[in-house]
Structure formats: structure tokens, C-alpha cells
View 1 (cartoon, helix red, strand yellow):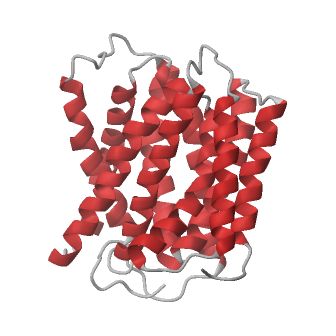
View 2 (cartoon, rainbow, N blue to C red):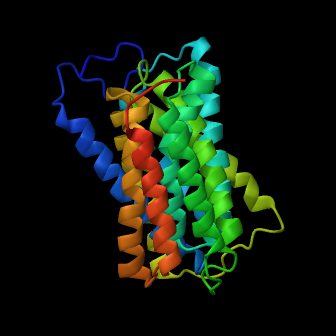
View 3 (cartoon, rainbow, N blue to C red):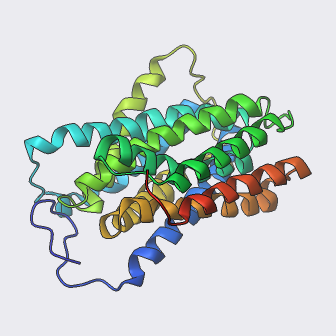
Length: 307
């Protein structure tokens, strides 16, 4: 790991092991998969915007203890637009879509939609970074989108998932926001530490979502419910800090397309956790649709001709 001269905070000299970014990314995917379960639990007692705001506040308070590590950060004016884009994409827009999505669909289906993110990143890199996109990537993206659409249409309406079709579409929009986040993060990671970038996300998110508390549509909590409250604390500490820091570290050490490929692990972990903790299951048609998503991802990862 080369010493970070401009970003400050957790800059370490020396070379990190090649396996360390991979371990960090896998761990981040486990934490992110668990966030779908934790959100479902938290939403049983608290309004979505209360949960997201609480999550951001917990993360922000945790980062206050790390301020001494962030004081040496030297912010460059030319990076401000990328920092704004990063924070606006995620957590702001991302969590608005995801919070509503988790009200309408199951954790397992929402987790499956995240598998599309690596393909979106490849397309975003083509549009915004001038990278060329291969034919197999386009074909894979089409297959994955067909699978995601079939998964959404075949979703059964339940008390925990009153509108899977709309919920999965909103989760897809959250992935579009995550694409913008990943691209801007990759640009910033060469100059700023993962710790600093994660802290910026938490602080911006805490301020942004505090305005939703003023909305008449936000139902303020009237009682303390232990398990959902613990889920909010878990989201703010382990997921907001842990998962984002580990992912940001992995992105800083690997190409964006390679790092984002680890997102494909989220659906696997989410389906397992949804079955174990929420009792969620897939119908045969949904299993077929999920396999189609993974087939699209597999096709996109093959290497041949470029357009």
C-alpha cells in the first residue's frame, strides 16, 4: 500500500498483500447482504426515513472518534465536484430508492437485483470514462435485465412484499445511483483514504436525511423496540462504516470493474440470510429468473471482441 500524501487518514506505507483487497471485498459483501435483512427488521417498527437517518447518525458519531486520523486531509478544489457526486449518489439518492424498495419487495429479490451493478459500472465507465464496451458485456447486460424483469414480474404479493415489481424497479434505480458512486469513488481513491471517503458519506447522509424528519409523511417513533433499534445500530456501525470502508479500500487497490464484480456475491449471501432469518423462499420461476441473471453476469465476464 503506497503512502497516501494528499488524502490523509489511515495512510500506510509499505505494500499490502495481494489477497487483502479480496478479503476486504468479500467481507463487505457479507455485511451488505446482511443490511437487507436488518432493514426489513428495522422497518417493522420504524418509518424508513427514521431508519436511514438513524443509520447515518450512528455512523457519523462513530467517525467523531476518528477525527484525529482525518485532520491531515488536504482537500483539493478540483475534487469537490467528485466528492459531491459521490455523496449525492450514495448515500442520498441510493438510500431513498432502497428504503422504499425494501418496503415493497423481499430482501432476497432486492439482493438479486444488486447483481446488475457490475454491468452498470461497465456501461457507466464506457459513457463517462471513455472505456470501450465488449459485445459480450452488452449481451450479458440484456440477459441479466431480462432475468431481473422476470424475477420482478413473478414476485408474489405478501405482507412483507406488497408490490415486488415496483420494489425491484426502485432497487434497480438504487443500483444506477451506486454506479455513479463507484465511478466517482474510483477517481477519488487515488488521492483520498477509504476512511476519509467513508466519513464524508456518513456526515453528508446524516445532514441530508435529517430534513426528512420535518416531513409530515415521516412517522416519528413513539416507543423503543429493542430488536429493530439494534438493527438500526448495526446498520450504522457495522454496515455504514465497516462495509463501505472495506469496499472503498478494495476499490482503491483494484480496477473498478474488477472490484464491482464482487457485488455478484451479495445475492447469494442475501438469499441464504433471507431464508435463515426471514423465512423467505423463491418460486421455481424466480429460481429460473435468478439463474438468468447469473447467466447474464457470466456472459458479461467472458473476454472477446470489442465494439
